[in-house]
Every structure is written in C-alpha cells, then in structure tokens.
Length: 159
Image (tube, rainbow, N blue to C red; front, top):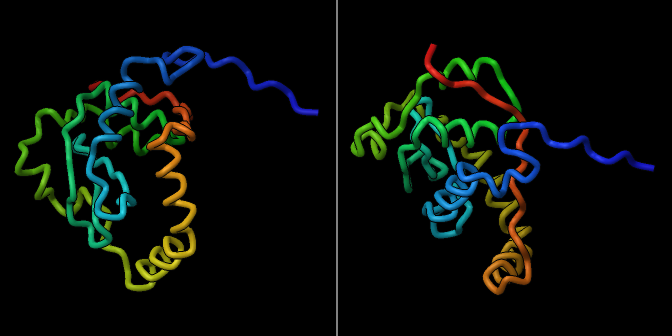
C-alpha cells in the first residue's frame, strides 16, 4: 500500500505547470537550440545565463534569465545551500550578449573527457530508437512532456 503524496505547499501551488514563471521557463527551454541530436545539456551559470553546450563546453545557445526565472530553474533541482549563495543576486538580463556566447570559463563545466564522450555516445546509440520514437510521439501529441517537478524553494534575492 502506498500513501498519497502530501499536498504541494510551495509558492507554485498544487500544479507548478500552471505557474506563470514555470510556464515561461518551460517555453524558453523548449525553444533553446539543443544541437543537431537534440541532446545538448542545459547549464545555468552563476551569471544567470541559461546555456546549451557541446561536449567540449562550447555554447550552442543562450539566454539571460531574470532572477524570478533563475529561481524557477533552481527550484526544479534539489536544494543546495552553496548553490543558493552562488546565485544570490544573479540577473542574466544584465549580462551582455557577448558574454552569453563567450562566458568566463569558470562559469562552465569543463569539457568532457574522451571517456565521458565515448560513454555518452554509446548510451545515445543504444537508445537512439527510443529517443526517435519519443520525439515522433511528442510531435504528434501522442506523448505528453513530463510535468514540472519542484524539488526545492531557493531564495536568491540580494541580501
């Protein structure tokens, strides 16, 4: 027997998919270029810029997020006090577009090792049929995207 999940008490209400900030963030994420295979990772820098990257940490696409959307993005992850401190006061809308595309390397993860690249390529190859089928089903409306899951409640407001 399983117990029902406790009601959501976050600022997003019982259905975070309907909250304006989460809707806007989901819309932005859906429009970012994720590379030719559609599998580029999303990385948010402590500058508040959301980027998609190649395996060598080169920027594919980027957009500066306002603080409310940085919070919305972080709230989808598990809480980490260090992350909260790192993003405190961040505002990607104040970052120049040149820095979106050529950020300080400290804002990005290091390029993947040859071993990590090989592992990712192997996993993608093993799952390419499933990935293609899911993309087809999403495009046809047969498969709905996963809903937003709120895992934390970050406070990144300036102190």
